[in-house]
Image (cartoon, rainbow, N blue to C red; front, side, top):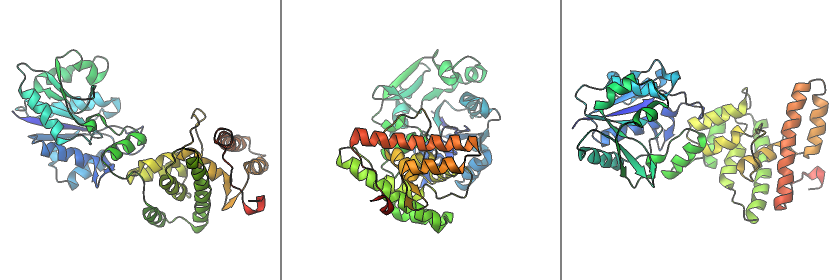
Length: 373
């Protein structure tokens, strides 16, 4: 029996914000892990469907010495994942019996899962899709008979691959592998996958200092970040003493790095993307939110809320009451209604966090020396 592995690496990665095939996972890129999975499972052929950021993905394939013909470009990648499935199956060698279909970000699945799925497939008496199941939930990758390929190529119905396969026979095989359910659609998903693999999700203090040096973050910004760190840890320790679980090491990393790219436009987003690309999703999440919290984001006493509040409590490297900061921005932006509205909204969000911390947890906000603290 000849099998192939079709890796889908063409998507926009819109919810992640950076290219998922190139995300680091334990010293390898997600794409490299997926390719290793195919080799370990003895797939006779591996195809990688490219699209968005084609050159970067194909450069990674070149670095990994994958044959050029293994890359399949999907010109229609912006139309959705099913077009990548169609592109991939159209490039399968004619003697292929069945193919595994693996989104590149589902790179935590084990080799044993693929082998269990293939053994179940080999026991079939008639063509059917075989899908791994963990704890009652279907996962990746399914093994699909090439007898289905022509219909996949011609399918134009609803719900893409799921819609097409729903009308075909399928068999499930229970696997002891939660990795079969994990993907990296969002930074939070990325963090969950790394934790499942017992990999770090944020940098150590030493790594933070190296990242700041590499970014050329000015000393003035570093002083601000250190002051934010002091305030954030004060709040965290009060919460932890009251039974809330705040990861002080994560919060420390977020405080040190939140303004690492302060010179760039949209510096919060820029820093978050930079840290995602380095493999640190858990620290990227609070940093992405430290400038402006979405109005519909519910309050939670977490690292993101503490970083946001601490950042608003520190002007330059001094603690300043939020009420004073509100007066300051009102004067500063009195001739710029749009900027004033945004500043008031941001300070208002900090005031709301401070209120909830005081009322719900009895937290005392730190004060600077000039404010009696």
